Length: 303
Image 1 (spheres, rainbow, N blue to C red):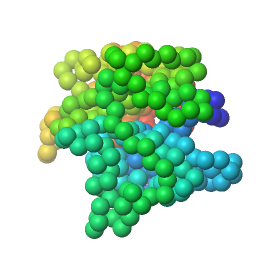
Image 2: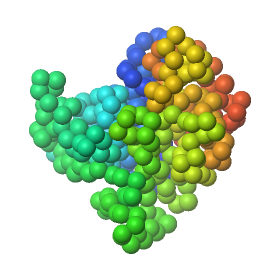
Image 3: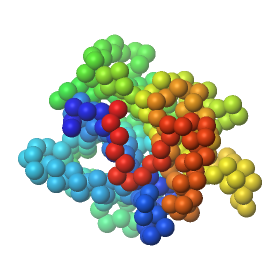
Image 4: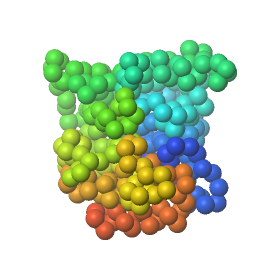
């Protein structure tokens, strides 16, 4: 399994968790996606979905009797992308090595943002008290993370450093989106053996499409794209959501079509959208880009 390019969804909601019978099919946990490539474990965001992922990883680690090593990529530090990390079981184990990357926003490093989210009295355990080995770094548009087999992640400057990527190395790059939040969000592209996925949550399109995102996404096998609002909510609901930094299914499908991607996954579902509404959201996107699926907890794709 570890030699496959595998993507598994553990949390697919935005804003806040929504357990209950109305969300039973799609799931109610907030953003978290597991990626496996070349033996590496990569985790995209740490919403409440990372809690169940952590339990699964603990079981896996005990069964193999090996250290658990993971690269965690934060898109940004809003609650729905970090609120599960304090409950991520591997973070409490001395047998875990966690490489944590994210954007520097509001002049605050990703490490400081994570530390602040766990300060008393909001949480009883400080970041420094977690027993895992944590290596925390900012990642900017000018940098790439290179994952070689059985090696720790290497952060390289795309313009100053010589980057020799073999066909078996995993390469991760970032694009800074500025629509949400005001300090920006990281969109990630993960590439391995000629295949790629793009993770574009909390992004809002522009008239004619976001040309920077289209270029960044061009030719990807898989695009995971924010589709929080329906067209009606975005354009003229009781509380118009234009400018809030999220997209519609039509926007997501437009990006997928313009970038000529292989498959689109609609992501970051609004907490007020039950399974029935989301089925309509999926159908709307399919009219523009037929190879579209709705992100659901447990959905597993192999590139």
